[in-house]
Length: 510
Ligand SMILES: Cc1cc2nc3c(=O)[nH]c(=O)nc-3n(C[C@H](O)[C@H](O)[C@H](O)COP(=O)(O)OP(=O)(O)OC[C@H]3O[C@@H](n4cnc5c(N)ncnc54)[C@H](O)[C@@H]3O)c2cc1C
Ligand SMILES: *[C@@H]1O[C@H](CO)[C@@H](O)[C@H](O)[C@H]1NC(C)=O
Ligand SMILES: *[C@@H]1O[C@H](CO)[C@@H](O)[C@H](O)[C@H]1NC(C)=O
Ligand SMILES: *[C@@H]1O[C@H](CO)[C@@H](O)[C@H](O)[C@H]1NC(C)=O
Ligand SMILES: *[C@@H]1O[C@H](CO)[C@@H](O)[C@H](O)[C@H]1NC(C)=O
Ligand SMILES: *[C@@H]1O[C@H](CO)[C@@H](O)[C@H](O)[C@H]1NC(C)=O
Ligand SMILES: *[C@@H]1O[C@H](CO)[C@@H](O)[C@H](O)[C@H]1NC(C)=O
Ligand SMILES: *[C@@H]1O[C@H](CO)[C@@H](O)[C@H](O)[C@H]1NC(C)=O
Ligand SMILES: *[C@@H]1O[C@H](CO)[C@@H](O)[C@H](O)[C@H]1NC(C)=O
Image (tube, rainbow, N blue to C red; front, side, top):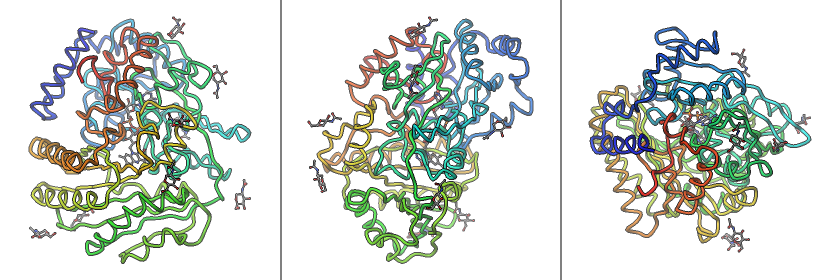
């Protein structure tokens, strides 16, 4: 606990100084990691790669954001649940610090990587087992979304997972917005079983009948309770194909696109739950141009958009890739378009859907971004995702997550999740722009509050490193998470030794 508190105090200092260069200070004193890596190499010869080797270099750089490239002491690549369990035993016995990496798509520094510790990518846990009778797929936590779409497409099935091919399984312990979100709710609520390695090195199944408290805690609890090695995901039937693609709009269409976005949030997604749109605005600092580019999807094997979605193609656009195709094909096309290892920063907050607010927030972001054109490679991305009443009803009718979004608390209104993302070429520019970005996003939160439109939820999977995502679930859920922690991880292994990413808030700190 003392260590944990020290860590958080340093975290507060880092927040005040606000620069990535101070983050290495977050290092906690534990066993010297070279020793940990030597012990690990003894126990698992062949699975451990020391600093400087090709495998180390590859794994250390295999991240979406440059902010995640760190300096681990070694890389450990377990290829079985048993090896993960034995390794956790070794880490705990020797106070070794480690990170848990899925697809590496978090932008939070050290969410899935670590300085002077063991980087543990799950990538060799990569099997899929489709159970047609049960309507589920058991998937290794090292898989990427593309693997799951490819495993399910031939059966005319799909799962409630991320939309982009390269994203990893981390979203199954975070929140998770899928193509079927409007009908089926969050990814976490469509997980039927987590196979978990606990702090004491034992392997358990967490599901509705076995360790149901842990099962619930993982539905939003991130890496705070154990290493998940496999997840069993509910599948749903498809018509063998989906109609979808990306529609690109010129700057002159943006006012109309904004109207479409509001209509999608409050009418299209509400009245037809097979609709799906990922509304995005982009600002390119190099060209000083803005566009909107929206993945537009209808979850049926049709040849054109249904009437209710026609506004997306009636609005003047420059390019559309809409067509009937397999889900895997769509997931491949929806790759974000950025090469890996750019500098990425993201922040998020939630509001009640409101047309004026949506218009004003983009206008403000657009003009804020224009001040930073001089930063090489600057790109600003603003995404506006709905959480409809029905997606909450679907979520909570299947399970009870810890996100604090009880459908009875939203007054049957759609929520809007507002995402603000920055991309740039060099870490050198972060010290200047990131504190200003945090301030800008705070000013948008204040604007929403002043209009009585703010909602406290912070979606963990899109959150900034210093945004209190888990605290945003509310006191009852956090109290529940502390109880589960006391039962499954009484010595706080997954805070002390796994410092990365969104952690449980320190008691009394919020
Ligand atoms: C281009 C892009 C597209 C995206 N699209 C979507 C989308 O369509 N829908 C959506 O909901 N989100 C989406 N996201 C957000 C995404 O859900 C999060 O970034 C998520 O954290 C990614 O998981 P990962 O495994 O790739 O990341 P990682 O960075 O590897 O992991 C994220 C966190 O989860 C923890 N974690 C990972 N695996 C395990 C495990 N096995 N056990 C315990 N803890 C674990 C890690 O320790 C880390 O803290 C997208 C992000 C990007 C960058
Ligand atoms: C799983 O990992 C093994 C070992 O790297 C690799 O040979 C295999 O192709 C992978 N399978 C999938 C589905 O990615
Ligand atoms: C739940 O866990 C129990 C105990 O391990 C296991 O027998 C059962 O198959 C699990 N259920 C699911 C849906 O995975
Ligand atoms: C999938 O759906 C297509 C289109 O309806 C059909 O032709 C095909 O036989 C289906 N495949 C399976 C495995 O059900
Ligand atoms: C931004 O604009 C420049 C100049 O037109 C172009 O080369 C670059 O590809 C654009 N970046 C993105 C991410 O679209
Ligand atoms: C960038 O574009 C805006 C219009 O969106 C324009 O007002 C501004 O002058 C442009 N800046 C430069 C440097 O071209
Ligand atoms: C919402 O209220 C209804 C009716 O009172 C109740 O049945 C349901 O369980 C509540 N939902 C949640 C998530 O508490
Ligand atoms: C919620 O709103 C929808 C659409 O406006 C309406 O059809 C539905 O009956 C409402 N549900 C409740 C519980 O009020
Ligand atoms: C490990 O912890 C779990 C959860 O608290 C407990 O059920 C199990 O008995 C423990 N196993 C050992 C070997 O201590």
